[in-house]
Length: 78
Length: 442
Image (cartoon, rainbow over all chains, first blue to last red; front, side):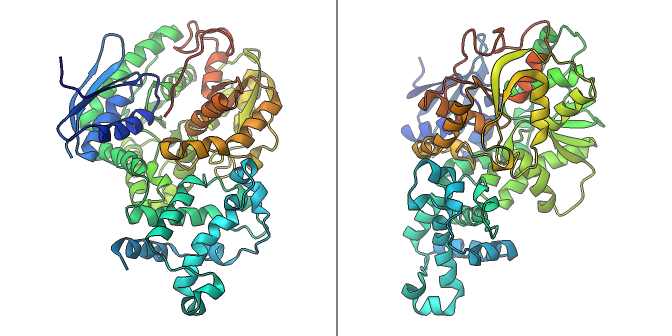
């Protein structure tokens, strides 16, 4: 079991909403903590890494799952 | 003077050119802009009159540029810019104006109030007061352009899967979604996600087009920030890609601000002549139908269908008859909203507002005139050729209980092409039957 502080459901959200909601949610956890989210829009495969690179937060993992959803874990860095 | 105010004023000064100065000086206070504005039509209060909003910036401009106003500000209604005033200006420019320019085309003097709202947005962005999410989205796009390698493999993996879906639904084992094809005629620039890639891929393959897919997305949040530096960096990714591949034209997905900016602004930002032209996907669809390159069934969509003119496509982009030509070829019962075309009423989702959760209530309230227009047509399907418009109309559909289905033009064309198998999300025989696909929005 991970120590993820927040689990989010972004299924059905289209661009740019996963990033919009992620940006809001990251403020709800403390520095050093992680959140995880599941999305269905393939756009997250590019958008989430780009967002973490531009904001300085850490993308811990980003995987495509067998049910064709995308799961990513982000750590708040600052 | 604080550093924030200094930056904001410096940005205002840097933007002063003939069009902006004319807008700042020319208002006759006739009030004709009031009824033109969807905010005022939704809630007729003085704060919703474009001239009232513009006066907020004019008062700051007067203080800076008029000797008498500086000495006796009370006499002329001049205002020295301070932090609360900048915060108020910022809120007005980002939450009470979608930059639709309906006020401008209805102004006897042609006063460009959205140009003033853009000036404020630029001041806010430069001084760090702009909505954080718009800055983040613009910066994320810029990051993709700096080093595409961090997402390219994942992107290509997705495209391979989409290609399999494409072959399955079309029954054509040779159907492809080419990426980075050197010398292709068309560089098609989608939005993020499969919904703006698969349907156009169906069409391009059926038309036997020589095309290639951009690895970047068309959306440009730098435009909403009125930050030319950021907007130019976002656009440069695609300009460079088009130049590198040697394409003849860039074709932009169904996206209002992306089309208007690539068609009209980008050439100015880069101060040069490109070797390629810019068109909207809608223009390409119209050509394919006109030239018989794709076959569509004119009885495919039996429901009443109405079309929402995106402000950036119609009023600001000049794409007015092309979408109607396409729709009349695939729809049996087409109904116009009134007013329409270059006089169309904004849906309320433009200017980046769809991404600004903090202003969602205002956005939905300002969508009331559009909701009423849709209701009056009695149509069950609303077509919009802009992602932001579709998201906004989806929200007002829910809020005002319109009970309509919202879709893109390309999706209707693909339905009318009568594929051997339907694309995902198009399984129902009719648009208004079968299981609805629920799309949650922020």
